[in-house]
Image 1 (cartoon, one colour):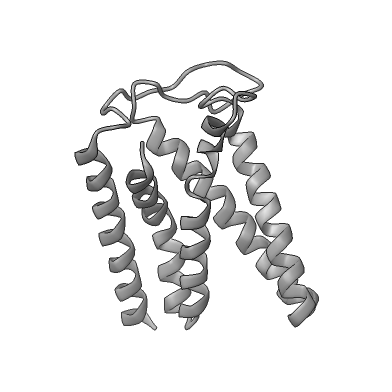
Image 2 (image 1 turned 135 degrees about the horizontal axis):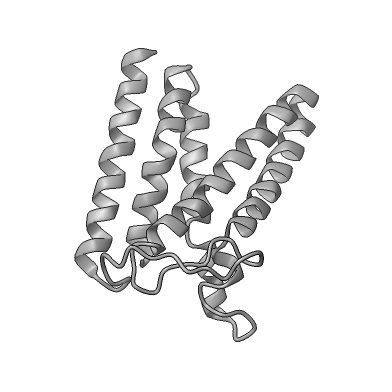
Length: 164
């Protein structure tokens, strides 16, 4: 998929977390998580910017998702820990781990819709997964995913405010 599709799927997968944070009275943190998710949504496609990596190779895998989650968690934990102490650091580390990992998984889910598919269990397995529903370049499919994700996260945000 292209950027709009990846953004939409990332927002849809983040929506339950964001809604729960809004319901818990943490709308600023919910917004920060959505921004983190959007900023990481296209990270796996950096492989297309280099000849050293095959497109939809290692960066389109579960191990890469976990690596990004660990790095996001480490950065969030250190930054929060400097200001708020150990408990804040640990909480934000978990939050960064969850959002970082989930965002890369959202990218994989969007790409599995395309004929090219993904190999999510690289390097353990080269098994290929595809639902072959739409081309990555299909403008309508990309904007439908974006609209769907936007509606889902808006709904979660309003539901969170209602439950707060």
